[in-house]
Image (tube, rainbow, N blue to C red; front, side, top):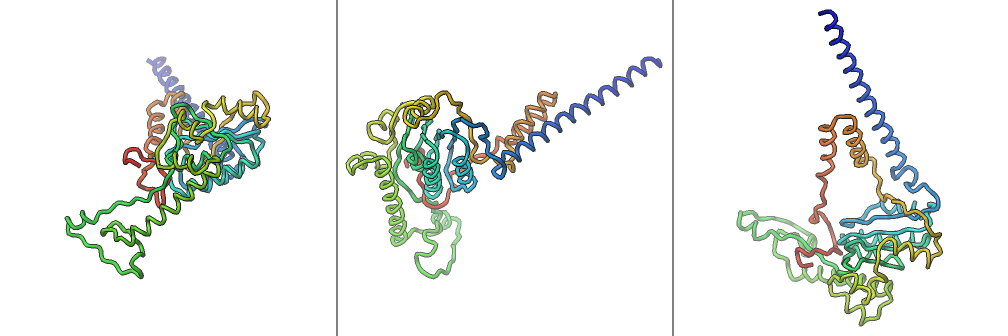
Length: 326
């Protein structure tokens, strides 16, 4: 009995030691990743550290104003990257955010050879972004265009009448805070919005005309708000070539004298440390490898809840919304 008791005690001690070292290994791995996150943060050194490589920049989803992204592109312009390939898959976003991103790419293009590859969609504000480059490549079935702007807002005045709610207000002039969505939009307010939309639309069209070298007749064919496939877009001068990243590399080599066979490396525009996205993923993998699968799955799923709501976009929009006919 004494021998059995000793064996049980030894096993318990061994199990505690094993658990301790497992936890210690996880903590060390997380600490190492935390240090890496600080180094790779916007305030740290650039992600692209290897010399003699081509930077791959990804523009995905809705486009908003983003100062971190602007600063990251400025750092890329001062980095050792030989060239930049910008991959775009975006329906657009706010006109202000799209203009900011366009300006950043134009400034980057002045320092580095730059080419755009349309992955699946470069519509509206996404196309504003694309024309920041001198050369645009798209796949045959990619969608590009949707040249136009819109201003939309919900109007719940009929709903308020139904539930018996009335919004009272005192304002300096009739057009102050108009439209507000709580009352029918007045003709004067609609005319004011119409002037805003037309002015931004004229800016968008002039940008396309200048950047893509179109005459008025060519511009009229592509500026009615429609999207076009990559195959159609070549003939319409919206893009320059059909292809993918390999096509982009070949263009850089042939037209910009970029050294052949350079590796293409990802460059993160907003490698934030605050949201711990990269840390969550790494910690999940580490925990799973150490035998803590259930904990790993909980950590991994916390990053699955983030979604962008299009209704949160404010101001003038350069956005393609096929579900609403825009």
